[in-house]
Amino acid sequence: MAAIQITNVEKRYKALRALDGVSLTIEEGEFFGLLGPNGAGKTTLISIIAGLNRADAGTVTVNGYDVVNQYREARSRLGVVPQELVFDPFFTVRETLRMQSGYFGVKNNDAWIDEVMHHLDLTNKADTNMRALSGGMKRRVLVAQALVHKPPVIVLDEPTAGVDVELRQTLWKFVARLNREGHTVVLTTHYLEEAQALCNRIAMLKGGKVVALDSTQALIRRISGSQLIVELASGSLPEKLKSLVSHPEELAGGNKFTLRVNEYPEVEEILRAIRENGATITDMNLKQADLEDVFLQIMEGEK
Amino acid sequence: MIGFQTLLYKEVLRFWKVSAQTITAPILTAILYLVIFGHALEDRVQVYPGVSYVAFLVPGLVMMSVLQNAFANSSSSLIQSKITGNLVFILLPPLSHWEMLGAYVLAATVRGLAVGTGVLVVTVWFAKMSAVAPWWILIFSFAGAAIMGTLGLIVGIWAEKFDQLATAQNFIIMPATFLSGVFYSIHSLPGFWKAVSHFNPLFYMIDGFRYGFFGQSDVDPLQSFAVVAAFFIILMTLALRMLKSGYKLRH
Image (tube, rainbow over all chains, first blue to last red; front, side, top):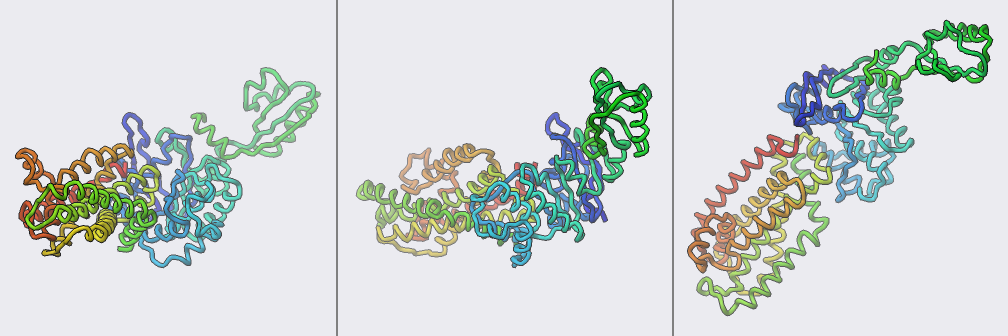
């Protein structure tokens, strides 16, 4: 059974089509990335999954339960880390986590709360009032609140926006562990290297539509090969290499060229051609295609 | 049920942690009303035979405190959670509509009754009081607190800004409480205002509550109870429909 099944979901805000017929299936145990520029509809989609927003059309199920008609079953299987840094200033970290457990119907949850706090480095802040925590610490509590009921499906909406390296590493270590233990993880982020490192499958949203959906590896393979960047001290680029230049403006003048390379032996051929042309190389760099290249290409609508 | 219990506990803890503001302050206000109005009007107003004006005023002030504080609790809790965004912690879990309604209303009732009890304990020494029908005292105080807690929930869901809540409080709740017979019997009003008072549900709550002390009231307590019960059912139905539809909570 799918962890999350999204079928033809539409959502309008007056004239704006925030979601325009989105369909996605996220299988159990996946680490799924939901990427897209600001305003693409990521947070709207997550809000509909979480029951915070209602779709105008279409259906969403969590572990087979409809998020509107079977909202209690659906929500008890879902843990959501909201994007906004919100907290209740009346309570301490432990009180906050105990109450969140209670809302999910979990009593006497201290053992698990302690474990979650330990993994998120929150233990020495347990009895601190929420108001007194730094932004990064509040973000950790938000993550902990989403996990108090051990949800099989975890949704993180830009959990690392504006947080330091330490928290990012702590967080990803813990979330990756939960994923290995069988939890499905859905992630939105603007840090594409994070998505590339963590997600096994990725959907890209643009203007409320899914514009790409594939495994992370397959998406990266869409950008054929790598790029060889060479800077020439003297001489010019051989005529036969000009067709490999990725950025046509480089041919207009200058001595730096970005060349498409599909396989490594081609590098040797390019270097030989340059040498035979009487040019000398002062700098050289081989760059692997990454998710960012794919993202930019898809978002710019290029092939 | 655990969800309901937890939300109730959280709502009670929320006002209890700032009890100087949520309990002590309204008790002090009620004492000031009693001292000032009681002193100024003691010799001028006689409402029921054998009942001094201060004695008449005590149940009115108790009930006014119950009603205002029950309303303030649910409405301010909701608007604060909405504006700070932490309402999301209540909206994400699998709490049913009944659990949300029940927890907010019951917490508001607890706050209303806590303040009311405090006012009674402090003011009862100012006059010779009786309690001829204690059941009516209990019924009207519980019902009044629950009704105003429900109304507070409705207004809290509807309001998007603090000033909208303040508008409801200043232009509906305050006039309705002051014109409900806290400080006078509606029999002393001119015909028109007397008729208008009969459309004010708060009048029946205070009148019925006062009957419990003196065995005398402006209308029959059974009639008051019928009006109060009908008003309660209407508000509960409205609040439940708002929660079910996600009105202003789930967009």
